[in-house]
Length: 203
Image 1 (tube, rainbow, N blue to C red):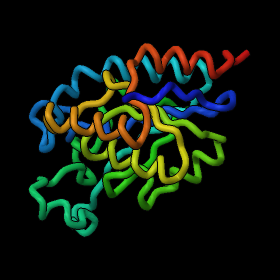
Image 2 (image 1 turned 90 degrees about the vertical axis):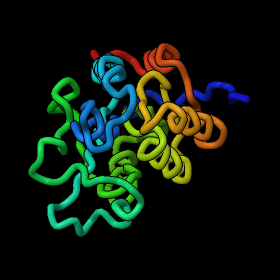
Image 3 (image 1 turned 90 degrees about the horizontal axis):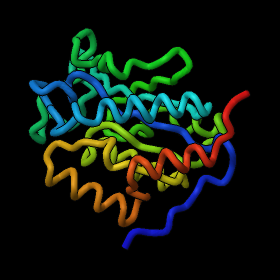
């Protein structure tokens, strides 16, 4: 059963996280192409535009691995192909969602946006208590980030139209898991409505 909607407790306490919208995950011929990733691009673009208008921080995560492969960990042992290698086109965030000067971009080496990054420090500095998670992959980096967010006492909202997974089945399973125990899976329209209600328009 879906829990009742929980709102952020203070003005400007929301942040939008755009997870790994890079060529190596979004392009149709990408090494780890996420099913339906192209369809979520305009929706994330719209959501990010609203966030900027409302003064809500927009934070991008960007997976990155060294050419020497020393920071892939065990990922390549479990069926993943090389991806997001420094110096390649695949590592770049797609042009349609290119970060603005006012946005934040964090490099990560693992699935979670929190693991071995300063995301938690940034969010605390911004006074954030609620995260809107978008991007890819629902069943990998989005879910891992949601898990760590919960453990660090951040509320998690996932607009289901703004995430895509490595397969339809894994995508749906991840949404079910997130909605059951990690946060709230919501329609995009509902998330946008509550973002507007939680923030005053900058003057």
